[in-house]
Length: 54
Image 1 (cartoon, rainbow, N blue to C red):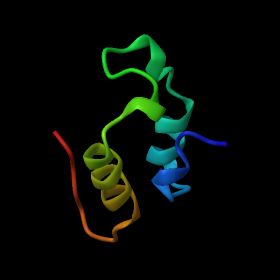
Image 2 (cartoon, helix red, strand yellow):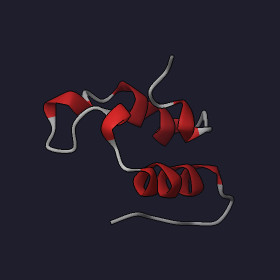
Image 3 (cartoon, rainbow, N blue to C red):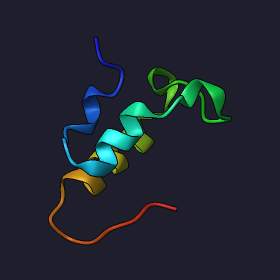
Image 4 (tube, one colour):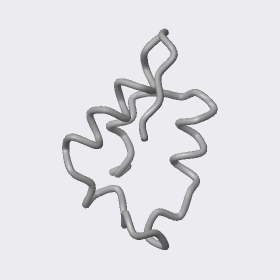
């Protein structure tokens, strides 16, 4: 199962997120990310309106 399937997008940024080695960061692997982060990422990557997360 793809731990980043929740992204629900196939654009350039979603691809970059999928290819990044998250285990090597303080955020850790995507399967341990909080639901709130997963939700906001999916929203930002699938909307047609400009958005960013900081």
